[in-house]
Length: 522
Image 1 (tube, one colour):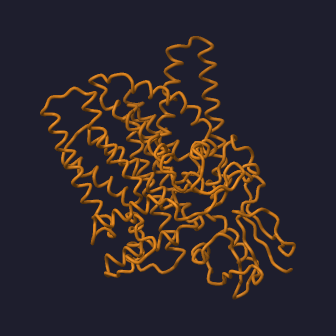
Image 2 (cartoon, one colour):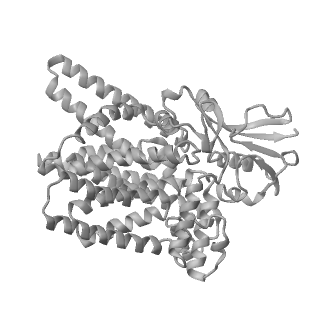
Image 3 (spheres, rainbow, N blue to C red):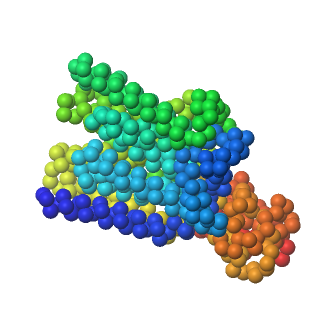
């Protein structure tokens, strides 16, 4: 047994080492996403206020956006005096991946403890990495991936806080919760869950009066340090904590800053009017099918456990069941009531995905247990071989897609969406504009002009200089009739381009174009 345990631990260590080295090797491969220049500017505004006292932050349009994470790359950029835009954004990609990597380690520990299994903990991290869209976004999405990462870490600190309540665990949980809130106010669900836990304990766990007084005392400590850290980590709040927080909360309540449309099931609909099934459909068509297969029995198993009173030795597992159920469903149900703008796929709800994986792992454990206790003989062998075969087949398809179409793992769809061309007709594709990097690099290879006038649909001019070397040779114009090249990622645009547009290059996924370069007038 000791040999097996050491073997599993070695497997986990090797997995994380290989993943970290892989991240170092490939983080430069990803293009510049649509939001990155704005996100960087948000961080710089806060940095200049903190270090130099500049007050432009308070007249800035996005002043109420959480900048706890954006402040970090801005600090690195200033500390090391980085002026090359390409290096600036590559640094951002590495730091985003580094936070995700740290959260993966915590996710492994969270699931290892919950399932009492090193191997299941390993599978948890493995499943999260082999989720193509999450993996790709872990390099360039400095909004939704930090939220996902901090939700994982806060779930772990929450359970630890109730397992071993102390001032230290209260401060740690408060710090992580505050950092999450100061990235995006959706993090307010964490202190809500923390308070709810106290009431669940009161209802379901017998305790002496002294124990309850102690629980309330540590909860008060948590809430005190939470308020302290929320203000400390968010400089926008420093001068008027209550007023500016209320302003940010009202800004979140508006939920309609963008006002655009999103392609969903073949129709362009307003982002503020997406149907209730928007998130489930997107999650269903972009998640490896085997995870969905495991999720269904896992959800049933965990749901049934919630209606059984916990044994004295299973309190932590019962708390975890409550947390995972709330983590997965409460934010989505809240969105049905509030009706926020949802666009760019389901990236705004990536943070619920780790809970989805946990339910999938619960389903896997149940299937294994069911086969071991309920089945016999050849039928048992056939059942287990079938499950393993389906699992390996689906995983091999996912790995093949991620390797073959690197660095466009963000365009993964499973078979429920149909082939890639069908997916393109029904859903958003390269909404981040990442494939423009490849198109710009191609133009630089074929055109030696000192000045190359171009028109790029759905992108910012800052992106040119950060996406490729020699970006200064490009001149971005607003009129496509005055340029030499036009680049399109087909967002809000069908393939009926003018006859004067001669396609000279395209990026394809399974023979489906996701970006094209056109030469004009020749």
